Image (tube, rainbow, N blue to C red; front, side, top):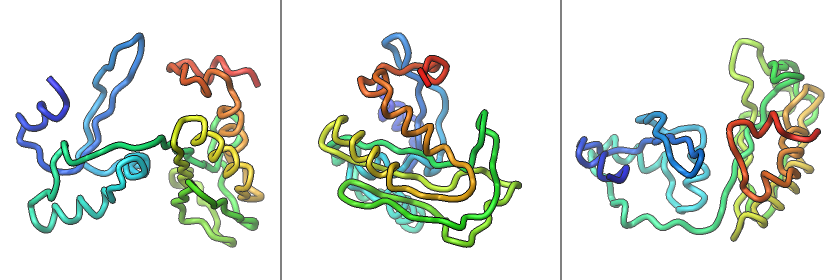
Length: 187
């Protein structure tokens, strides 16, 4: 049974996110969230569908204007979640005095930052979602590498250098990923 068939049997009619783990050649269901997830720009990038607008439209009308077969996927997309983090992924709050954003073809940035903002210690350390798209995986990675090299957030610590290291890893570039990826990275 497909995900769409299972949701139809449940009479589920709204935006939502199904999460799976892919390991040893098989998909394993983890959870379903009946809301837009932080990763929604990836789906928007490869489908051309504004999921937030679609969910708000459904909430007001009770009707979805499309069905699964209307959705077409094109190209590749990836997202780097930029966090205020120091060593061992510890939150690194502080002021944002320097802020230069990347741009160009195939780059989307979702962020609330501005020069003078102070990242508080009480909340999630997420600063931005940087999304790249391309016609294939290699182009998508190349665009993300360029965007990360252009991105400046200072003086606080971020995980931008870690993201750049991940993108250079041969296993990442070839798509050979598993839950132990970070442990096996050559630094």
